[in-house]
Image 1 (cartoon, one colour):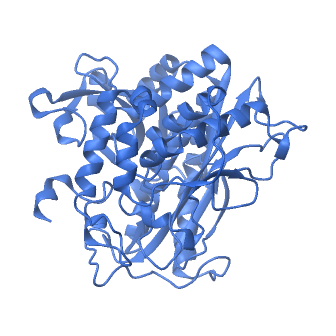
Image 2 (cartoon, helix red, strand yellow):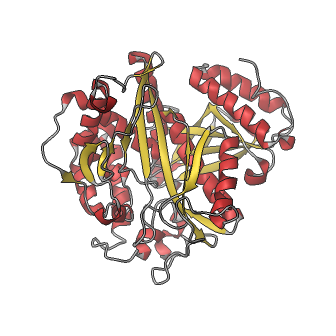
Image 3 (spheres, helix red, strand yellow):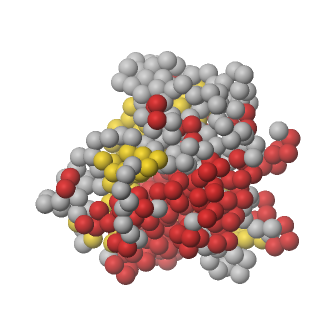
Length: 476
């Protein structure tokens, strides 16, 4: 492993192409299984010697998937990386005030080199797992739990879980359009251009071009980017990768989109249905299993090219569809997207063609065969969501699919009731984590009417978990 990514060069002077090269080499090391301790030692040594780095941005997420970041001076981080603490009671759903301290354990393999024009000069980024005050496993941190699940699958069964999300969003006029939302005025689209019709210098096209440039530099391995069906809606696709890396990329995708939009005086919005009479935004989650370098979801003899492993995974996801619904659709606003008048993927069934199905089987071959879970909203916690979907998929050998076509819940209150009663979710997440998550969802649900009606309400936007500042919660 030659140090392309840990080669001393002045980070402040690096081009986007040089940053991309370093990020791709780091990604290759993660995927090839270079021991994390090796990467940790090399990274810490690199920090000591790289004069262009001033600070390290450490990222983690709460139970609902909201991103939290802290910038550590690099010299402090080098000397104190094994003793990073924070106040867990300040994060919704973590610890009580009387037992507030939690720790951050940096995943040194997750380093990303950052373009200075977007993130600030002299910074690199890493993800961290949340640990309990004694340094042990913290059950409500689903990045750590997803990592553990994937490592167990790889070590015990030789299986690598690959995930490719397709994340849609809207571009609105003005900075902080969500935080200043008014249901009387609604959101104002940044442009009226849409699917395949955005001109080269249109606002949406300029946003997508810059977004794609940064995404490429961060090592996403871009595939295609385009406006979506609704005006001012976008989706940038990139190559599949293993589940933990994929979840990290979801977090970065939304962070980069919001930052690019803000610099342009706009807002990138990932509410599932911010405008009632337009198509909503989804996060279709494509999943496949790999073993010995082969995609084990593919079978030339199987229906739609699917293997028995794939069919078992589909059976598990469909069987536990109602149990999973709150994890996949975690906000009041998400249930507007499940309206069947707008291509809603709300039917608990599988199909190769019907886009109203919860699970779709895209056209594929030996390399690309996968299942697509279409129900997931872009405001889902990717770590928790992928973890729960994988747990359901792995249970598929032991379940049977009921006859007839049923539909997912039409409002968050029903989804909460099903989730709260679910033995599968209690077993999968742990009763304590399940109950914490329910409490968080109830707090928001109580701020909005159960009957959604025909207009997006203040409560479902201002109290959304990715939008509200919790310290201002009581003032709305």
